Figure 1 (tube, rainbow, N blue to C red):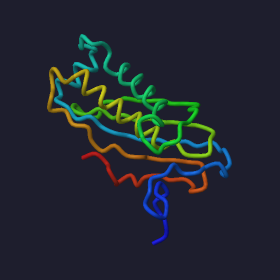
Figure 2: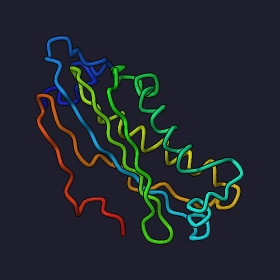
Figure 3: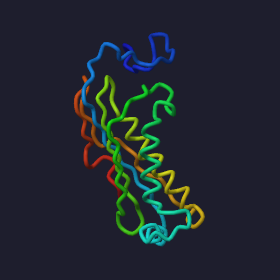
Length: 165
């Protein structure tokens, strides 16, 4: 099998992919994840009852900040000059919070990892802010929903794959 894993050379050594020959294009990515919790915890979040502050806004800011630092967190990611990061936090039923992150950049490499990092850190922030009342929360089904731009073309996840139950 030829070297299909781009972060390894032919001898198996780790490497940062050389993107210097690629054209800078507009690239976008969308990721999602869920935090499952007790219904009372979600109600308290929505009613802004936590002494640490507005859970949704702190999680949104944490996700945005994390997206901007992805190149420092993931060893082989290129640092990117992000042009846009948006995060939506929406209740689903009475026991889940859906987190969606959208990222955009004009660069030589994609922004999928930035979107996934934003979702992950936003979810961890929800957990951190609410763990005093609900240590049983779970972070679930973090995945890439879509990406556009670049030589590999567009990707849209199958709606049935990873759909919350």
